[in-house]
Image 1: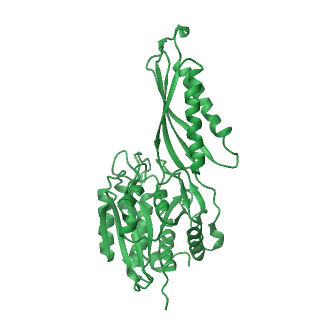
Image 2: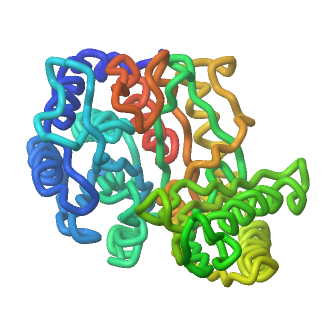
Image 3: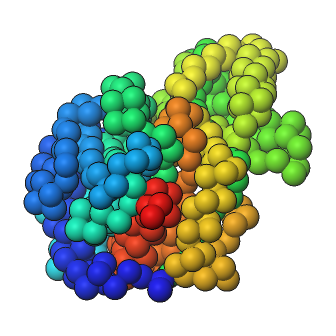
Length: 390
């Protein structure tokens, strides 16, 4: 069965929860309405424990199986926050908050885990404890790290932990995963180029910081193309340039901002070192100076081999082996589920969202037809991972 019959029976209810969350998006840790919605549902379902305020505004629901001999606990995680994007589609449940929308599908992730919670609280056909983790601030706020630092793993006895994300363009009813790095680390950088301001008609009396910045940007592109093994992956992107205000003034300084991404710690270090060298030495050749500051972001999301195989097998038991890609290419986007995987073994899996606009796009919408697949996978992970021994 690709979808549990009981979950299929209340698929419309899951969609309704998702639509409510979609209409009321909240950012980062300011997810008070969303967290309250989740906590109320978990209590209505009859969860044995509902804890709020974990990692500031996170929610954890605990469901104990009808057997308790194993004394084991599996964590399932969904993210709750939205993005600062203006929604453009005129959906019946479109965002009611200007400048905010669920453009990454976290409304769907939350609704799927709620669906699994409803099913598991009704059936309890497992031996141990299901720990349902609803996390704030995935979009740049490090909510996963905050929940871990708050002692979540120890408090609820989490032994292994799993996460899931929808992927536009991946077929509905399919899953994709890989062992090892599946999503990249990300670090932000700010570069300051200091030259000598002057009149645009007399560039020989100035040190043109814009020209220097242009050479720095070009040189930064060699960091990946000429330092990284072609069989490995890394990205350096300059995404913002701030310089001057007048058409006839050569500005004193230029500021560049961007990100670097890698799939391993050694590669992350290599790229940082090369960026420092480029920013230090290229401006010097023009008589200017360059400095770079890093703001470390999320580490590499790295799946553990045994847990990757386990959840892939569970997915195959639901949708068939042909619908599970066990060696999907890693994504260069970053994900703060990486913090949870750094503290407990587990895995992160992709769920097909079908033909939709891309993530973080103002026309994106989570596919409600994907939710029963995700909720069924979560339910089966608990039942298969915590089997009852008769």
